Length: 335
Image (tube, rainbow, N blue to C red; front, side, top):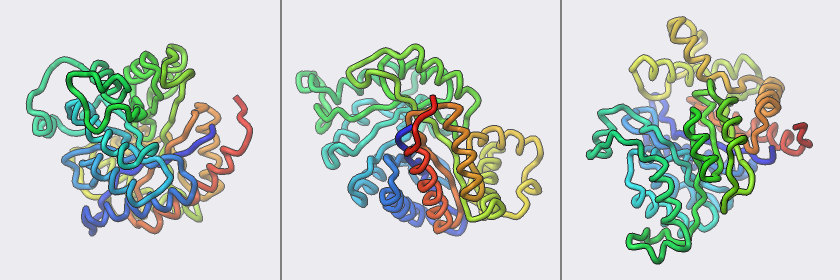
């Protein structure tokens, strides 16, 4: 593994506003750039009071303007919600404003509830057009786009790098077929990680974009000075995920001393399984856990994420993680 990156959902903490969350995202991106993260990705979610990154392309532009070298991108844009031409125009514009710094990760899920899906894209189709939509997007960014009857302006010739995101085998198959880089959402859905990586790597077809597979694995991180402090800070994300699972989404909760007292055992079991690809604790503990993830899955790149109520604690968590990952990426690979 040679690179490490950061995924942000622009969480809105209890007691704070969306404006606070967006300001925190800029602050986090600037700190991540100084710490050596390769990419800073933002994710599209809708109708969620605790996530402020719904207008993902707009926020990417805002963050890119506040940074100077780090790649900024979408992890990802939920393609079923949008016409490919609109996505091509948005990201073609971003790539024109910030050349060589924009990534476009594409997801197949809507990233929200069905009522919101209907509000986002009113003319719904039962057909799964994700592969065709990906192909259409690739064409809009290519050199031949100038001669197409419908063009993305800006967009043509920008060659915005496209990633396929997934949490199942489907995305792995699409990424392998088109010869695109693949990012697995193991930070919240790790069950099929090993199988998806195997499918992607074994069926990959070299393309104009990549000659060999390039796989990114995502992991949650909550680092602090001690294991006890990190577990306390992480309780906010556990509570938020549990409430989402039980149909009660809201802002990122304040941390609690005993999270098990707040969440029923059956729900807690689901949450812990969903968040099992993660590292929590002191620098020594986080190093051991991240090393194990890297050794087991051999990613080309690791993307970490984590929601902490206190912004200063979140900055410190990602700074600790960056120091660990800088050291791990400097070590020779054992695969």
